[in-house]
Length: 274
Image 1 (tube, rainbow, N blue to C red):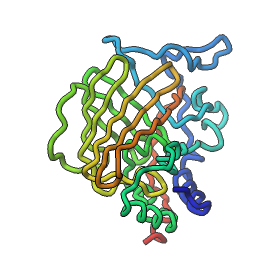
Image 2 (cartoon, rainbow, N blue to C red; image 1 turned 30 degrees about the vertical axis):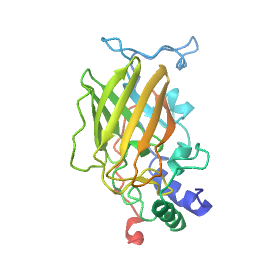
Image 3 (cartoon, helix red, strand yellow; image 1 turned 180 degrees about the horizontal axis):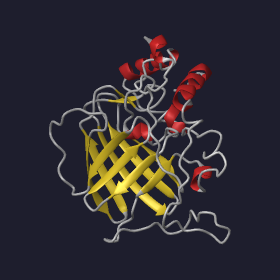
Image 4 (cartoon, rainbow, N blue to C red; image 1 turned 30 degrees about the horizontal axis):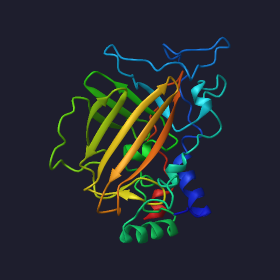
């Protein structure tokens, strides 16, 4: 389902107002492979852990080539604007026919689009689930240890934990924004299974959502130094008529660090949305 022009402008403006002026730290990232001209060699081999598995550690963003070469030494930003991935507007943008909504959700998404996403939790400064964070114009840092993969989400100082011991998912977890996540390795691919989500989580500006019965599987690969490929499969019979799969691509950002980006600081729109 498409986004009206007004909704896109309103949503993008609310998302990026602080991002466009963000002044990230300029600090060299250790261990970055570089070409003879000093530019980052994005196609160099992916780093590996002491155990031989791909190391996903680093700062990631939805496809901004400027961030991959470091922040601007004068403005301390990586470009005038950070792009939002097409899936940020419509998670099913690459799927023929779009997401397979249940009739009730198709009607709700239509209503949310007509309302310019005014009830979007993101607009109201609530947390973004990891599905959405992968396509928003905000940094996500992965910190990988032998037992845990942590995602530090720049927007609203959010976080997610993925346990790497292949533990069984809980039968009845406390519902949360990020759910409960357990992972195992299949060769060089990390397979993450998650459940335990809240019943009202938006995954794009259209108002597509997952519910408390959702099961999400991610298959994460790092084919080279500069890129991540995250294949996401959502199985949520309450919201969708069948499981669906999309691939969300990330590009590394180097020579910088995360900066607190707290939505409610100087937020001017929230009162008018009540």
